[in-house]
Length: 255
Ligand SMILES: Nc1ncnc2c1ncn2[C@@H]1O[C@H](COP(=O)(O)OP(=O)(O)OP(=O)(O)O)[C@@H](O)[C@H]1O
Ligand SMILES: [Mg+2]
Image (cartoon, rainbow, N blue to C red; front, side, top):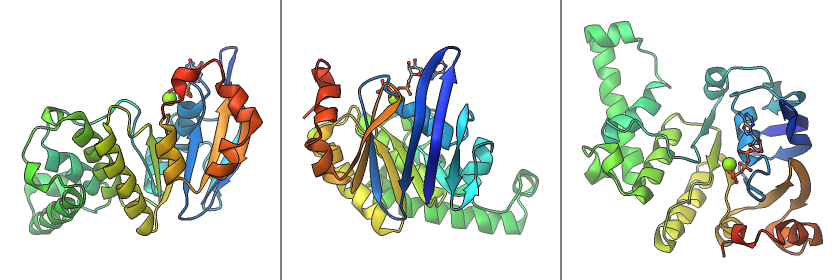
């Protein structure tokens, strides 16, 4: 699905990522962990086209996307959520998901504005599909609530629902359980499994170790922009390099 080859990112003198390579196979859940400032979000920003790598390449489904724009990469089936939730705060819950759906459909703003029959049909279809995503996340009965009035846990769910509505092949989640309680986090874990069952590949950054160890098939560990380990959760847990990287930053290990 995705292949990173020797990716380096420099920000005016600071090397946020240095020569990072790894693969994400189809329909797996791959975790990225590492202490604060390790370069995790930078990695996601490069994959989604926010900025290009300084060196190296990103290959998505066999195509080099290193220099593509975010909208082009999104159209190729990459969808993401953000470390700080990013919703259209004054729109309703349903409208937030519908925006994700609109991305996938044909009608242009012009025909939507004129409310042509084709656009109306499409609108109805978008509404119905969006409701299905809301149902999946237990948010259907809150469809008319204003997004930023939802509790944090539900805002996180809503963000994933919107990302899924674009029907991605690769879903990228940046600290999706930050701010969730244990009950919500467990719900989120089950949701992640369901998403993988839909055949979607998932790349997830998380500080919460129990969550990431339970959820992932494979993990990559970054420290100061360098990949220091890669393997199954069990291999990572027993890696001396990883244990050393986390020593002295114990607040990062949130069991
Ligand atoms: N746009 C940018 N311009 C300059 N420096 C940046 C930019 N984005 C990130 N950095 C720097 O790159 C380094 C890696 O940051 P990044 O946000 O990727 O870390 P992270 O692993 O996601 O950390 P956290 O766990 O705190 O979210 C940091 O030193 C950060 O200050
Ligand atoms: Mg980050």
